Amino acid sequence: MVGHDHPVIEFRGVTKRFGRQLVLDEIDLAVERGKSTVIIGRSGTGKSVLLKHIVGLLKPNRGEVWFEGQRIDTLSERALVPIRRQITFVFQLNALFDSMTVLENVAFPMMENSDVRLDREEIAGLARHCLELVGLAKFGSKRPAELSGGERKRVALARAIALEPPPKVILYDEPTAGLDPQRSDAITKLIRELQEKVHVTGVIVTHDMKLAAEAGDRVLMLYNGRFVADGSPEEVRQIKEPHVHRFVEGIAEPEDVVTYTT
Amino acid sequence: MSRMNAVENMLASTGAAVISGLGDFGRFWSFGSRSISFVPVELMSLRGWRRLLPQCFQIGTRSVPVIMLTGMFIGIILVVQGYEQFDNAGLRDMLGGIVNISVASELGPVLAGVMLAGRVGGALTAELGTMNVTEQLVALRSMGADPIRFLVAPRFLACLLLAPILTCYADLVGALGAWAVFVFYYGGESEPYWRMTKQMVEFWHLNTGLLKALFFGGTIGLVSCYKGFHCKPGAQGVGEACTQAFVISFILILMLDFFLNVFLNGLYNLWYGFRSLI
Ligand SMILES: Nc1ncnc2c1ncn2[C@@H]1O[C@H](COP(=O)(O)OP(=O)(O)OP(=O)(O)O)[C@@H](O)[C@H]1O
Ligand SMILES: [Mg+2]
Image (cartoon, rainbow over all chains, first blue to last red; front, side, top):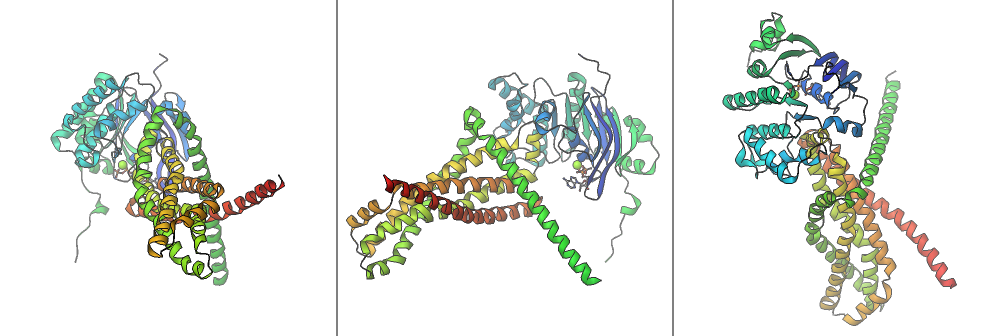
């Protein structure tokens, strides 16, 4: 294989605005191969927007996005297909297809991905296995609408990991949101295992500091369109900068504290 | 000063509306042409058929009852409307022919189209709109699957192919309904009704009706899918898109009907002029 010293994903001065709202402000980011990069930040700071740039679902207003040494923000939808086949995405809203059963949902990316060299039986087998991994072995024939919120999240996770060969990159948008602490711990371990055993590069957006600490190799905090913290989970926890410190400790920003008056 | 501002504002908002309207128009055409460009590949692959057939069931089979009801009432109402006049003029037996011409060439396709726009168009827009606001369309794209190919092409094709077939149902039931009222309510006779129908209704009428239905079906499919794909977020956005899809389809059906009539009349004259020469 060619030299693997370049980062898998790279953002160079990426700026994104929606109308007048500046969401990403000249972001630079290099995601290291085989590591889990965690992005934390308050609600509405643009974490999901950042993830969507990685697969070209959103295009920057300025700056460049690179994947495996190829610039992708200028590519057309069709040219993006080979790149998208190597990346899977756990969407914040899960985005399960509600016209299909759970099993069909999990199998769908493999059915449509021409890099996958499995027959139908093997695909169904792998899909079932992945459902088992997230503790939903018996739910294959249900419809997404019949599941609880946490179960849907896990189906979305199963869909993201079910690919053969495994995806090069998995983008997790709040993979443990809405899960109970035990299930969330199991998912954290699963993410860790994927990274350790299959060497999947992970980009994890989360508010869950436990997940960040246990599954992350590197934690970045997004604030007002820029990264204000960058380091190992332990380093970020030690940062004394007030915004970061308050976020990590879960203390409200002073201006957000309101007193209830009648 | 303030008057200047008011004028400027008016100009600006008119300009903005025109620009966004033109932008929408352009987007619609590129959406439409991409959808149509996938039709041949979809028809040539097994998976394409697998996607198409369920849509045919949803759009076609399940519309049959309402379409037949529509057709039946068109026929009945035309007979009820026309009977007195025709009877007074002593042209009672002609009624069957006249009614069936207008059902086959005009009212059948148009009203079946409007019915389809309501029943199918609304459902398509709501389905695709919900998929849009819950990020399912984005998810498809992120998997390297083209939502236009996966979702729009089969739905468009089903609308296109089934509108003429459904119109046939409407025409048939319309003719039967008209006959039933003519015979059982007004005491007319069956034989002249069908004879005049056979004499007066030409293949031309039937075919122009079906050609119109083809256009109406395609329009309904494209407009509804487009509106679903471009709806605003939230339940309200989806609801709005459904309303717009219906209104726009309806207006386009009437406009298309006008242009097709003008065009087909020209063709008819040409054809008949030609025929009389031989
Ligand atoms: N398609 C869009 N059009 C307009 N504005 C958008 C769009 N997508 C996101 N935004 C805006 O960008 C900002 C960042 O959104 P984003 O979804 O990335 O937040 P987030 O950091 O993921 O928040 P959360 O933690 O709540 O998921 C928000 O203020 C949102 O309103
Ligand atoms: Mg988000």
